[in-house]
Image (cartoon, rainbow, N blue to C red):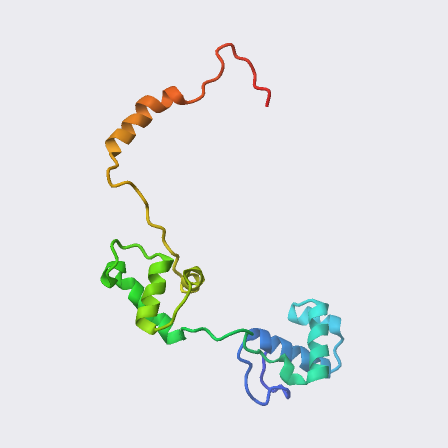
Length: 175
C-alpha cells in the first residue's frame, strides 16, 4: 500500500484524493532515481501517464500534480440546495399543485425556479436529476374516452385475423 507520510513534496498535507497521491508518489520515486518503467509498474499505471506527470512537475512545479477544480461554470444549485431538492421531490408532484405524481423535467424546472430562484432549461434538468440519482418520468398520454375492455376484445378477436399468415402452399419467402 502506498503511503503519503514522509513525502517531501506534500508540505505535510495528505493528498485529498487517491489519484493525486499517486501522482505525488510518482514524483517522489522519480526524485529517488527510479526509472519511469519501474514507477509505472509500482503504481499500476502506464509509462505514458508517468511521463506526463513528471514532465508537468518539471515544467510547472510539484503543485501541478495536485488536483484542480473542474473547468467550467460553478453549479447554480449548491450541495445544500441539491439535498433540499431531493427532499422536495420526495414530497411528490401533487404537493406542488401538479396533477398526478409524475416528475417531468418541466415540472422539476418549475419547482427549482419557485423554490430557489434558479432557472434551468428542462433539458438540463434531466442531467441534474441523473446526478441526484433520479430519472425524469414521462406521463402516459391516453384518451379519456378509452375503453380498455373494447381494446382487449379487439386484440383477441380482430387482431389474429389481420396478422400476416404464411402462404397456404408453403412458398418460401424471397428474403
